[in-house]
Image (cartoon, rainbow, N blue to C red; front, side, top):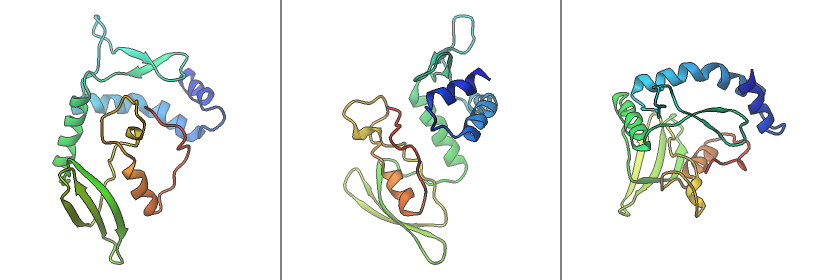
Length: 165
């Protein structure tokens, strides 16, 4: 109940109450999923999960992963195990949905090589856009290309002025 109210208060009237309820109610299960996947979380000397105050929070709810490299490796392996082709060191430039329901997109590798790719399905896992700011706390290369692609395919965005840096 407190967690839900903290989210509502921090949202200054813009919070989607249903999404906030889902977050609060599902977070414990998803935390267990993350631990089962192999994500290592920081712990106290007593072996309990270390809790941290998040932005604008009055109480400590956030858990902290030990190393982002661990998180990236775990999710990378999960995607590979699901049959995804991973395009590391690649920036998606353009995308189109074809008449047959497939997708065509243009990408560029960091070595300047261009790729034209056709796929039956795609996952936009581009990491956000915090690298457009000189100072941020996220991994380099998060330039917002996923936002551009999603919008081009008709995705709707909300509250884009709130970005976690």
